[in-house]
Amino acid sequence: MKRSQYAVIGLGRFGSSLAKELIELGYEVLGIDKDEEAVDEMSEKLTHVVVADSTDEEVLRSLGIRNIDCAIVAIGDDIQSSILTAILLKDIGVKQVVAKALSELHGKVLQKIGVDRVIYPERDMGIRVAHQLVSPNLLDYIELSKDYTIAELTVPKRLCGRSLRELDTRAKYGCSVVAINKKNSVIIAPTASDTLDDQDIMVIIGTNQQIELFENEVRR
Image 1 (cartoon, rainbow, N blue to C red):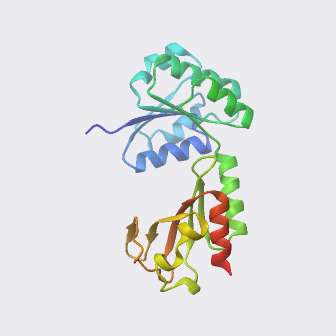
Image 2 (image 1 turned 60 degrees about the horizontal axis):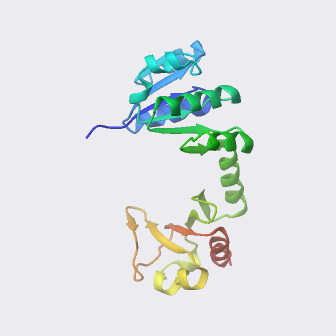
């Protein structure tokens, strides 16, 4: 089966980190930046790297960008270039266009022009760090939508040895334990009879309010 091919446009801190991780995961990555230094730095780390102006339609077409499965616009500080690049990628017919937004307004514009997914790295990281700071048992926090969140909570000693049936999180709090990460294994879709041990990590899905209620109970 053919692996997906990615293009990362903008090789600043975010773009280069994303591109390198995609390479680590085994995908082919085309890196594009108008800064020659940024391109040189990534030349041996990505599948292909080119110095190019992504706001030039002919240049993008000559790079075969239409054949890319997913293009990520990771341009750091030039909102105009980000928007123009996204418009061109959509016009050329790239299957999936993802773009980094520098602000809420920038994100709204990207959505209006049809970008498939808008990401807010700084905002999202700030939210995750804030939740981790105020919740000692919270290891990670990802907002899935406006209504639902997925969170990782360490199992406190007071819950060790208890089964999911005893916790009954769905009935009491409205959230669900969808996985338990144990020392040497992961239980996906655990049953009511599965028990919690010291140092286990519960993966929970629910609304922010439901998870907060459960997390407050866990901290008692």
